[in-house]
Image 1 (cartoon, rainbow, N blue to C red):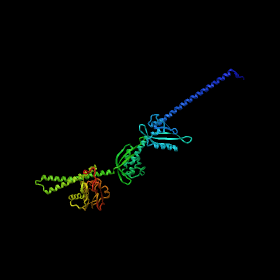
Image 2: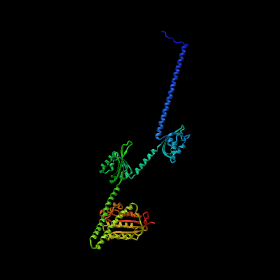
Image 3: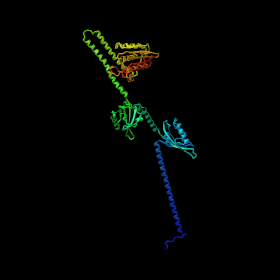
Image 4: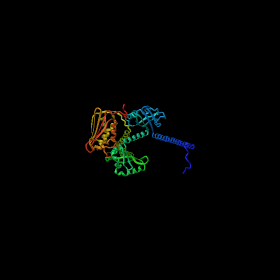
Length: 535
């Protein structure tokens, strides 16, 4: 078959024009492709730049949120570059940092500069990372804590070339750590027992106060049930307290008893609070226990004292009232004068009852003065033996010819006559009271600086354990109401002896042997604020 259109000849004008047109079209298409590729590249670059800006923006936000800035130090030129965040941390205006290592050091607290320089030198010498916390001083004088971190880069020859790193403001964290450390120190040094436990009663923390109070070391207590220190009869009480704490209540000043390791029962005042986590959920209990055993004993002694005081005051008051009522009735009903002997006897009894009342009142006043620190001394030159003789004569007049023997050396000194009289009266009257009618021996000796008084009875004696508390308030030489008394005489005596610079002691055995009270007084009592006669 013959073709419909035979091919054009090479030299045909139509063939040449077609080739040229095709070439132009191809060039146009190639240009369009290049233009599109260029536009795509520009668009991609713009997108990359936008992503970079967004990334930098996010980084800036992250740095600002973290209180962190970025730095670079070019070691060869000694030039330092800071990010704006780091300038803000240092309290500088934007772009005001002059870009030198020395300018950075000027902001470091003077006391911390050696530590910073040492850390940097170690990084340069050993290549280890630089990390240190230090203080900086802002231009307005404010001190901030920061943490600096850096990493060294060396050149091809291995020489330090530059360091880059970050610096973060850690002031709040440091302050919080300081608070935690102070709180921990307070907890550890507290005299109170501070204990934490789970809601199931498992002990999780145990301070030194708890070790002292309960006798268990922390290692012995932590991980065990709190029933370890709860007496058997008080487990239900502990369960009730835990139930209240689970409801979010605080149990304050709850007085109860706890059990020590050695088996002692301890009176305590407890304050328990719920411990919450970050979500506000109750996850445990914090408990503070204060030993109130001594206070309880003092309260009991005070109650006993009030009972004794009422009894002791009531007796002379009743007797005095009876005597005066009898005198009043006799004076009104009798037409003839009252017999002198009868009248004298009644008056003597009234005087004696008034004297007993006055003595009781004076003791109470002495307690008040001593407790308030107002015990006054009126010092004068005295002969100690004369005071003792006068006291013994007075007591013999009151109780009859008591079995008192005296061995008195001549010892003079400067003392308060009234207070010296009180010391001797308390000791001799106690010896007569507890001596069971046996001889009481009073001896006085002296040396160049001291006077020594001893009062000995051969009565019932004093229990050694009771001797330790004998000179405390509301304690009596014998724990028996039969002997009467406030339990203040020996306490007052010790206070007076102490005020005059001396000391008092006792030696005794219960049921056998002697009871010996010994007083040692300086021959010149020290002058003090209470000495109204001191020059």
